[in-house]
Image 1: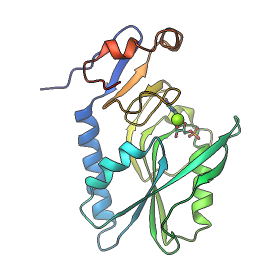
Image 2: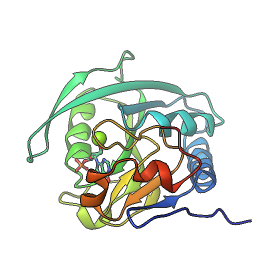
Image 3: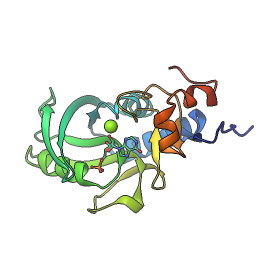
Image 4: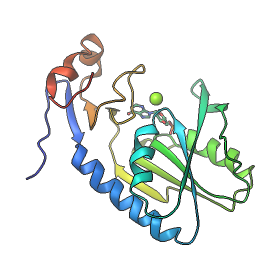
Length: 195
Ligand code: IMP
Ligand code: MG
């Protein structure tokens, strides 16, 4: 049975739990094949990629390590600074950078540059979501979950002022003004919501 997509005038579920699980399973299989005989490190960008990396790592059937880094962002220019570094040394390792969403591509570009300075054996990127139409700088995405439109998304790691990351599926905000005026609209739209 196809998953239903609950919705209201303000929000609509765009990617269900089942669709996330199926696609992440495929990405895990692809990584397991591509990295057979090696032991890659998944480097997830906090906080948004936490949920994705937890499921992706469990969809991978070869030995894999998981580590994290965190960023500070400054202004519109996309300038970033490392707020927290990985615990594992990445020199000589097969690194897979794990992000929740590729939007303008500025964060991923800066992260790429930063990680290449660590002289990994290889570097690839896995992004769960790809807002292709918003891209300002081209970034290679070796593993990509879903292409999405230019819309504001919430859930499964994506937040609105720190909230809603713990939703089990991904929702699109159809009317940002109405949503900002009534953030509880989302809680009323679905019955699979935690917050
Ligand atoms: P970029 O540097 O423009 O590619 O920004 C990527 C970051 O912007 C992501 O890691 C998210 O934290 C944030 N972001 C982009 N689009 C959305 C969205 O629709 N909802 C919530 N956060 C978003
Ligand atoms: Mg965010």
